[in-house]
Every structure is written in C-alpha cells, then in structure tokens.
Image (cartoon, rainbow over all chains, first blue to last red; front, side, top):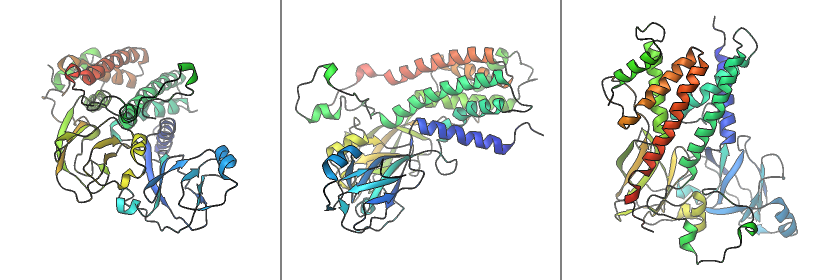
Length: 225
Length: 208
C-alpha cells in the first residue's frame, strides 16, 4: 500500500495550481452577460476573480471606482448605452453597468472572439484560477512547477510519510520556481516583444508633454500593466 | 557536442551509478525531458517559422491552426503588405488606439499576446485573404532518439546534465547535493536565456 493516496496527491496538485494562478494572473476566459433593459446589476459566476475587460456591442466600457460613481454619477438616473462599470462594493461577484442598459441583448456563449458575435453582445473577459479540468496551466510548465508543492505538502502531512526536512527543501524549491515561472509568464503574456517596433506606443503617438519631477508623478506603472 | 546517450552517461557518472543499479532508465529519461522542457521554456531557444492564412477575427489560437509545438509568438510578418506587424502594444494599448478594436476591419498592423492559447492580430480582415509568417518559440520536442544531439547551444548542453543530476538526487532525498546542482543549473540557464534574447541585437534595425 502506498503512503499517499491518489486523491490526496490530486488535491495538492489542484491546490498548488490555484495558488499559482491566483498569485500570477495568467488564465483568462470570456463570457457573455444576458443584458436586460432597465437592469443595471448583473451577477457573474464564482470563477471570475477579476475583470480584465468588458465590451458592450464591441466597444470597451471603463471601470470606475465606487467613490467616483457615488460622487459624480449616483444622483443621475439615466439609461442608454453603458459607458462604465463597477465590479467591487455592489455585492458578491456583481457588476453594475452605468448608464443602465436601455435594450435587451441575448447571449451566445460560444465563439466569443468572433466580431459578429462581439458586435451584438456584452462580453466580460475575466481572470480566473485553475480548476484542474478546463482551466489549467500549460503542460510545458505544469508538471515541473507543481511537483515541489505536492511533495512539500505530502512530506508535511501527518503519518508514516512525514519528513520535515524534505518538506522544508521542497517548500524552498516551490517558492523559487513560483517566482521564476511567474516572471517568465509575465514576460511571455503581458510584455510586448519590441523586436520590430521600439519604444512605447504613447511615445510615438502623442505630442511631447512636459514631465513633472519624479517625486510629483504619483503612482508608477510597470510596462505591460 | 553531446548526444542524449552521452548526457545520460554523464549524469550516471555524477551519481556514481554507471552500472544502472539504483536509478532506473525511465526515471532518468523523465528527468532529461523535464530539463529539456524547462530550458526551452526559460530561454525560448528554439524559434520556428510557419506560414498561416489570415482568419476573420482578431484572436488566433495557433495550436488549433495546427502549430502543435507553439509556446509563444516572437514576431509576425504580414505577407499581404510585406511588413512586420508592430509588436510594442499590449491589449490596454490597443484600447488606446480605438475602443472597438475587436470590430476594426482592415489590413492587420499589430499583434499582442492575450493568454496562453490566444494572440491578437489587429485589425482583422473581414474577407480574409493572404497569409502571414509566424515566428514562434517552440516547446521542447520529445526525447525519442538517444543518438541525436539536443537543440541547445553546444556549451550549454551541460544544463541537461546538471538538472537531471539534481532531479535524481532529489528522488534519493540527497537534498544538499541536489541543491548544489540545481543552483549551477539556475545560474547558467539565466545566462543562456540572456544570450538567446540578445542574439543579433547589434544588428537590430529600429524601424519606428
């Protein structure tokens, strides 16, 4: 009889994958919301952990903070084509569209990158975490990345297989690989290559503007964010 | 220049296991394949080219289009216009160009990564004609023939040996020794990654 059951190993595999994909957002998907005329609040599925982008009939609508909504828009009651949305502070996994949609849009949940479908729907592109079935890390990193987490967890579990020294080694390796792979994936998925076109889009598209001293520029942003 | 057979022998020599007594051949092959795959992922050292047809949307799943060993895009060349697609944009930058870029139909000008599977080519051709050349970083091939040479720079083939030795020692719970090999691997794979990215940099033509 083996020391560890398959069920226990699979549980740790999923745990490790979820920890990684929660820390390094790298799995995205899309869904279409069934928009109803006169309704501004919509509940999203539990697997939506953050929103990357929302389009209404193909045009991007912008996120707005709850404070801005309250201070500038809350007194207004308008309906029309949504221009903004709030994701937080309006309920669990709920978004509020503003202005309130004045039309009803049907939903088709397949082929959500097809322009003909994008054109007639409200589509949410979201970050999600691994579920071990449909949402997974790619095979070219999954096994190597999750192995240290699984071994760390197994060697820590009470029972005949417990080995605290081994658990400490695998914990260290898990932390190292998580960092290395996280940086690699960020580079692969979010940073433009800039092999053909150098410099940023902004620098070549707009007229030069005076720049504030470093201490007055406010919060910075990394390339690709 | 070493073959996989020679690399496996070097690992067994490191482990003082030349008689194949303690570590199985299957375990060693698995370690070598892990090493191979890790080097390709971290360094993107194998760049391939394939010609594909444009489709009538912005998002491309290259694996679905038959590029099975696809890992990530390096560059895209539009054969219709004889121009490289601009590669300095993120999805957010595309929103800065126009908020409905998903509906923008014209000759493709830009590409940007979207996720593991999908990459964007913007604008899209509503009536797709013509082709583009996709230059992509490929995944490591399976190790099926021990007599071939790994597709890695000759002086960096030791990376396979170090990774596999470390992996084998870990399975024997020799953590101190394994850590030393893994450290050598980590330092050198980083150096190799830098080298691959900087290749031909002095010949880079700044186009924009």
